[in-house]
Length: 154
Image 1 (cartoon, rainbow, N blue to C red):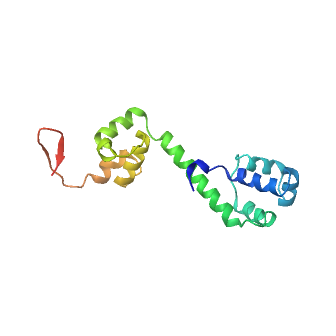
Image 2: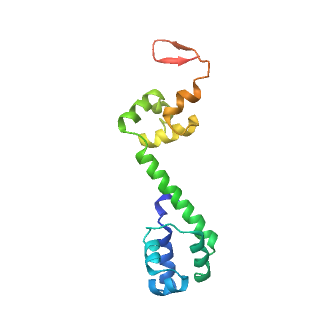
Image 3: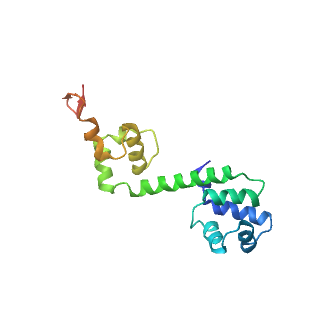
């Protein structure tokens, strides 16, 4: 599933409501939930719960609860990733990490933003935060040499 097609689960449910010619009031009645709850869900303001997914399966009979729950999980993961990349570090911090960990060398053939490079570098290093690097890797016995350029590990 491509990220550009990820929308809140409620937006997809709206399409099914239109197909079955159900308005919000009738849909809420069939689901046995308040109209306000349906409205918040359809507009992406609340998450899909397990209970609501089971109710959807009974009302929108062509779609299993597992589909709705899987879609919701994928959407929430997408939102979390966007939020993490956006709030991870300041530009100054990212530029410092880029120099320290040589993002330009590692990602030279890729068209990634600085934030995306940082996210991928964290995965390569196997750490959740750059501040953990020294704590995780300080036990390694590595010597360095300088051969007219930058320091290189030997």
